Length: 272
Image (cartoon, rainbow, N blue to C red; front, side):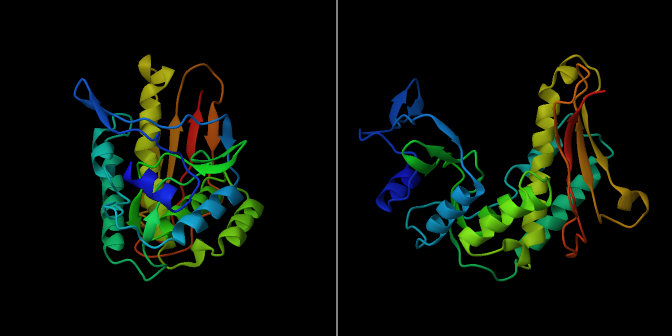
């Protein structure tokens, strides 16, 4: 609610609260009231860049937001995941530790600002009245690069954004986050967050419910050659009805940056 009111004061297009006294308590739970959104569709990468540039141009708000934690609940979710093989978890935990250490001493970058935290076209949407921002629960104060890495990773890691689209994103925002020294760490952090997400979907798959072997498995050629955590690939196999559900494949390795020389993530939901 604080974020929504701040965005309204700053005239940033976003979901709006209804002008009534709130929240109210119902059966011991807080209830809030929001203006109903018109029909919407995912925004474009230019829409995301334009709204992020507008958000990041604002002075850091005085409301209490807390500081960005790129690894919130990652450790707990990795530990709880039942579809990640036990012999892969130590490697993932070590990767998590490496990233935490790197994040503790980030290189200089853009000045801290309010960041959305989950800025992708599903949360920057188009309506008949224009583009607006939604899903505000991950707002925090932190490096704007965290918001930019989301689109960069979709171009460099998963291939969901084409090279041409990513170039347009950079042109509209006015900055290419992949040239920043800290980019690999935050990109790896977002990739690592996708692993328990993949595990959750493996658990929910029909194959998992029927016990037919849905799992998240790690393919780590560098580890197998004894070269350390140089590259990794995650595949989500949902064995169910004999058809491919979705495939997100890695397009290119990330630029070298110690302690993680390169990393790539492939999330595949595949049936056999």
